[in-house]
Length: 55
Image 1 (cartoon, one colour):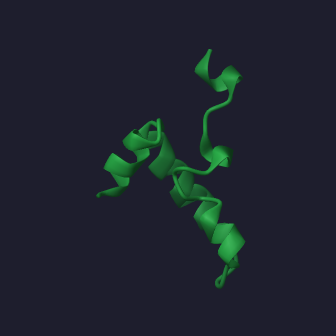
Image 2 (tube, rainbow, N blue to C red):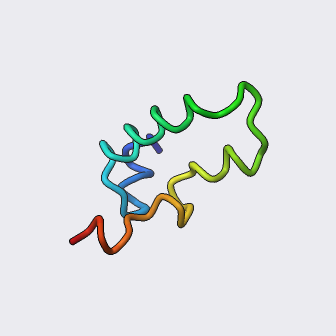
């Protein structure tokens, strides 16, 4: 499954998800912890749009 398909399957806009990944992952340390890396997986609640973003 591609990043785009995975984002769609988890209810995320693929373009927004990829843009956010590129921006935020570049801010992580060279060797992020497992928890830091896992927080950017598309099924993580942190990435789900808030009600304000939807409206």
